[in-house]
Image 1 (cartoon, one colour):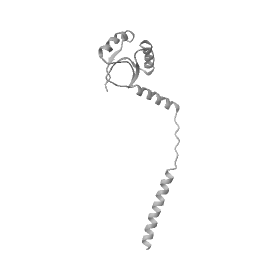
Image 2: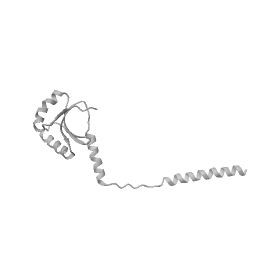
Image 3: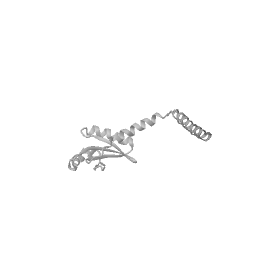
Image 4: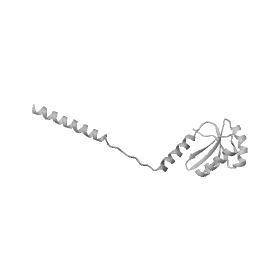
Length: 129
């Protein structure tokens, strides 16, 4: 009788010890403090990633370089070519400005002549998936 009582007490102590540990571990709180610039950078990255739409259409690349240069070029493109949509793509280490969304190469080449007058380094591209 003493042996079963001791075993029962040991098992009961182990169970009580585990439940107390589990219950105490559940009550810990964590406070996270982060810099505001981190959130701004994260939002900028989300904007850039949401702009990346890779499809089988032709585009014209008018700029490749720094972030500021890309933003400036995109603003200029939107003023000069109002009917074309444009986006900034980040491809390490450069930012690229792509404009247009052409179904055929001929369609893109027709407008490329006009675009090359303002952006002589413009390239015709077809993004890969």
